[in-house]
Length: 505
Image 1 (spheres, rainbow, N blue to C red):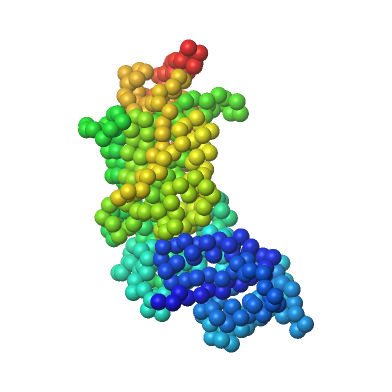
Image 2: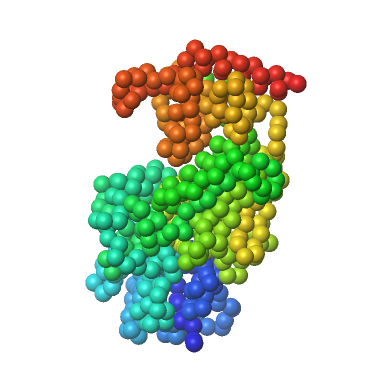
């Protein structure tokens, strides 16, 4: 089968990185590279021909015209028309399949660019994008639709496929969507307000198809995603030593939407690794420094979710050993990406782009495409050995721990200091200073999932009599605060003294 040629057009001075990103993505994605071959300006060799003629000939020979429009209109010919508009006109006359993507910002566009966009809007539907990664997601969704329309594939990739019988009213949580918008606005400048309708948000994220919900929308915002996708769980287990040997001190199977799965799995690890009490240099509250930086654990778990083969019966597994953390994922590396290439700058090619983009927008990962390199840097800064990645029947990420060290407490044993408090309760005692809210304590300890934090930290500390409520007769009081009891203050003094002695020994 002949590959479909995509002519990627924009003003040459704009979207240089975006053009190259789309070129690399289309050549690397396991599905799209089977059907498409891209053309960008930068790939033309030196020729004894006028550039504008070469470009128009490429438009004539392409199957799909993909235009990226921003603020600039570009240089004009004798008739006052830019090369980009000429290319679009040729694609229109030749009845090419046209895909147009616009930047979100409508201010300060060149007047002729605005006029050009108005002309396009009279002929075809265009799509706005807010970032390079969002552009990639938009292009991915549009090309999957193209393949289905042309009958080149019978069913789309998992994340873009329609979830039969699912509806917004019965299967999605509108409050989850509003919470996501609030997070995405704070973290990434998401353009929609938190008052936007679920339909509008889902459309913006390309999570609907012909007014029907995609699999990705259910996994991200569903009331009960496991009702449709039983393997979308994360199994977390802790072992006493460095091998898989029973009995195990902790085992959890987490369910919920993908945001909940990430937070619960990350908190499982962070609650059970060593933590060091830092210095009060900039605050009265002593920071907790974990032996593995939280972003490292988060990146590995988010990668497993974004690359998971959701058609597999297998689930993501997180295993905590004395010397390491292993994250197992029933998926494979993207086409043309090897283990060795992970240590070098590489394109972001998630197996499920419609899932990966919202995880990025919500701030669970810092930047698509650089996460693995960030893991190496953060582990190096923390004095840890370099992470290892393995690909066999499953893909494995191995993050090394630093082991026991002075000045640390653990969350693995009970009664290490007092015979009464767990490691988690001890962490609460160490960070509480004066009157503090639940969210303030949770932030200092560095956990994300509210329910897990309350169950594993706040409640044990309350039961042990180490903290107390400011308003004990009104648990949900809007000004509710937690304070150390006399017993908690004594334990805090004892813990800080022992940690100081350990550091000095």
